Image (cartoon, rainbow, N blue to C red; front, side, top):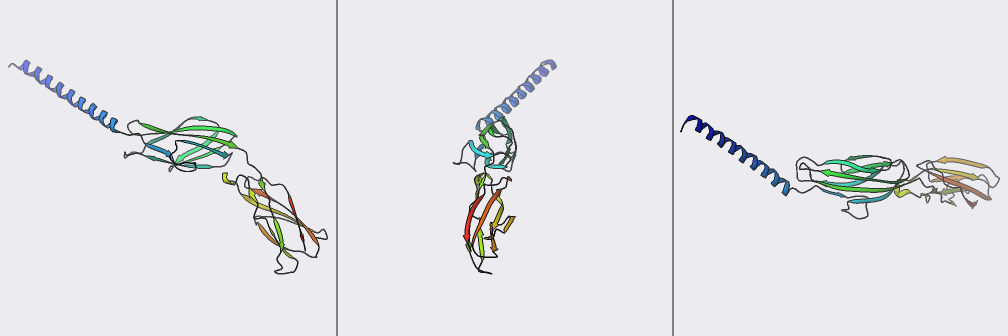
Length: 229
C-alpha cells in the first residue's frame, strides 16, 4: 500500500469516528430530552382548591397580596421563571415560591408565569385578579355601668366593629368616641383602643357617639348609643 492510499484511508477513518461521536452525542441529547419532564408547577395557597394552574381572586388596590406556588424539577439547576401576557397596571415579584402583587387601578389584571427547565421544557401558571376600591368599615358599640372606681363609671366597647374588606387586608386602626353627659358636657377622644372606661360627673341619660377608621384612612358612619347613669 502506498503512502497516498494509507493517508486517504486514515482520513476516512477519522471522519467516520467523528461522525459516530457526533451521532452518538445527538442521540444522547435526544434521549435525555425525551425522558425529561416539564417542571411541576402549581398554585398552593390562597386558592379554593390545591393543584390549580389558574388562579382567580379579588384584591384591594394598593394592597400587597401574596400567593404561594410550588415549582419542582429534578435538575440541579432550578427552572427559570418568567412573567408574560400581562394586562392591567400592577407591580409584582416572584421570590421564594411566592407571587407578591400590588394592583394600582380597579379592574381586571392578568398574567402568565412560565417555568422553563434546562432542556427548554416549560409549564405555566396564570392568574386573573379583580381589583376593587377600599370599602368602609362598620362601627358597632355597646356601653354598660361597671362601677369599679365610681358608681357612675361606664365601659364603652367598640370591639365588635369590623372592616368590610378584612379578608383582603383591611383592619380597624382608630376608634373615635364622643361622650355627652346628661348636662351636655362633651368629651371626645381618638384612640387605637377598642374599649375605654369613662366616669360621668352626674347621673341621668348620657349619649355616646362613635365611629371607626380602617387602615386605608377611611372612617365609618357615626353611630349613637345611650346609657342611663
